[in-house]
Amino acid sequence: MRYNLATMEQENTQQNASSSQDHGGSQQPPMAAKPVMNFDPKDVADNKLMAAISYLGILCLVPLLAKKDSKFAQEHGKQGLVLAIVWVAIWIIGIIPILGWLIAFFGSIFLLIVNIIAFVKALTGQFWEIPLIGHYRNQINL
Image (cartoon, rainbow, N blue to C red; front, side):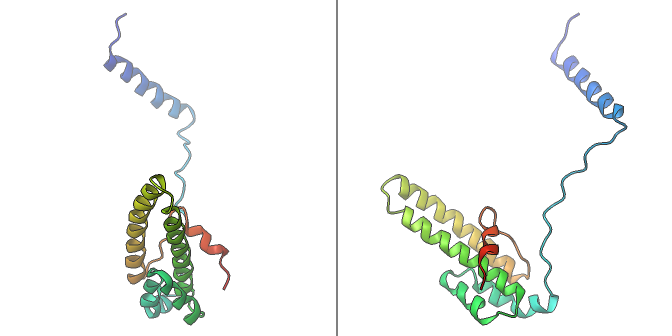
């Protein structure tokens, strides 16, 4: 019997369909997205600007120290502090010739983009956990 690519693909499709029917169609549901933090709408409305300031370098300390009663501003402030620490680490790595320069260059571009996204999200009243580094904010207790 002679097979071509189309015939083999057809057989694979039929086998996959029959195997899902054999299990009664019980497939694993897709993984749920990570739950988003819930904030008081009044807190968000009152502290959007303070949360956005968190992503302007050392100014991340302003919401951390001035708005201790605002969970929204505190979470953004902590995340801004983590981001500022990563900026400093990238600058220190930039001291190393050639490889450090490349890491610092591309790392700075990446962090600038992340900073802008987080700033805009804070201004619109949203919380965005920065990938890879955002979870470190939970270790900051002020």
